[in-house]
Length: 95
Image 1 (cartoon, rainbow, N blue to C red):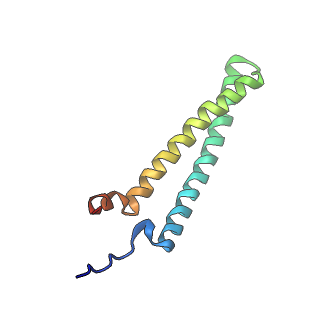
Image 2: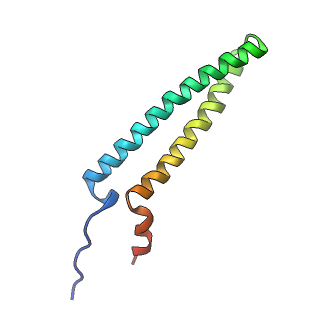
Image 3: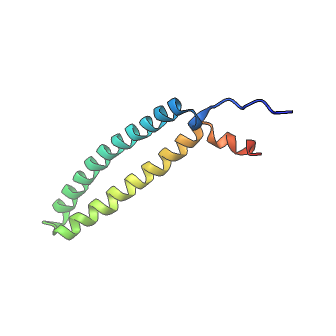
């Protein structure tokens, strides 16, 4: 006796997976714009408070602030992607 095939859902469905990944990339794009605005504002404030900054300090702000914002955006986006596509619920169906 064979079991009926399970319906394709979540990221297993190619059309829905394309939609979900497109939404994920759009969110990351907006977060990159927000990170860029924050980085420019942070550099301007730091230059106002401490005077002219060297390239190393500017790169440190870009890497530190921008990297932190983008890493947080990627990880939170993946959590929402996993939850929104049903992958979190599919764990209990692993037989």
